[in-house]
Image (cartoon, rainbow, N blue to C red; front, side, top):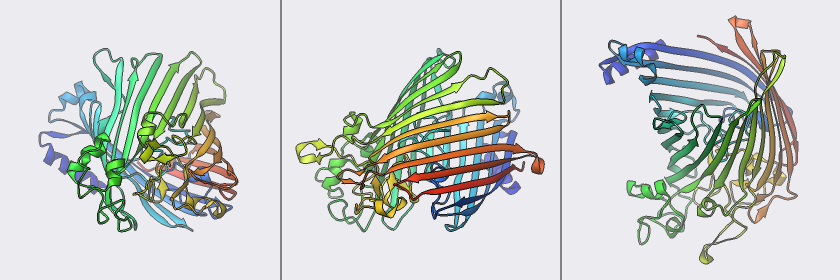
Length: 493
């Protein structure tokens, strides 16, 4: 580790010869844990939205090691940063490795990145945990299009650090980024890219009692080569991947497609790549007794969704954060209610010849047949499920990888502090699962999934954190399962 810090210092002095380290912070953590399940699969809420690090199958032991740090960059005299530390350049980094041993043994690297930031702007290179969209990240059932359910995709990302005020009065602020990433090669698709951008606008001064939010999140899987695609969907297996094709991806417009020998009629009609995302709305209100946050993510897959023809599809939530006024040994920190609906999908019929663009078939695509997934996990909300993840009787004859994208979900979450030191988290979700357009799941499986998690700081090893989680699945979508996860996490230095 010291060699890494030395290398970073030399690199900074090479790129910034007039700059030097004046202040740095670094830490290393180690976590050891064990997962036990009553079935050959992990209960839903022990694995969902865990950035792909929890194995899907059975019981396992896990070892997680990570490091993170930041270096403040100043001029040689160090005067600029001391007078205006918020305006200094900061180089930060993080890395984590996870080893799982059991029915499904794995060695994963869910995070590795470096970040250079200055005031409200940052540039990130690597793989970083993140959730995209207006949502309560701690208790949510999952942000619609980018939930943290899959392993993070490596990318280059340029944007703001949270909400950056515009103008001197600061009544308007933006949270925005643009990114280019790389999907992993699979047996089906090689050398495909990720294009992603987001723009969320906040109306209201930073310390105002009320804030309004509106924005859009747009993600695209594009380019790539697949020997499995016939001439209807690709030219000799190659999808559009040149720089001249990028405006089509960036602006979601049709360019240079008609009479282009590199482009099929499917691409020209449907844009280049698999486009999806959400249009987000939110309202935050500070009351004397609590803070309320209401939000709605309106999901889209094509122009019909962009023009709200699939209303009321999307994720809606309300979060309540009570103000702590007493010294009671029990206090509710966060309470969340969410509803997810994806039944409409712009109607049941897709007939482009008659300009009927329904049956949106969320997270599926005829060119990218593995769907909106990465490393075998759904990238968006984990309540839209793959065929391989459900019970055999629910693995219909559908040729789609995602065979359940018409769902209704009610979800409740709570975080509380007990005895002034224990953190308790609880989640319970109920879903109705209808399958995909024109291919329903038999009997509309119903599913309950729940979780209770307790985190307790202990004095062992000079101070550590013990976490114990219990989760259960009961219903018709998954096989019934009860499981527990217990871990010990120690920050070394």
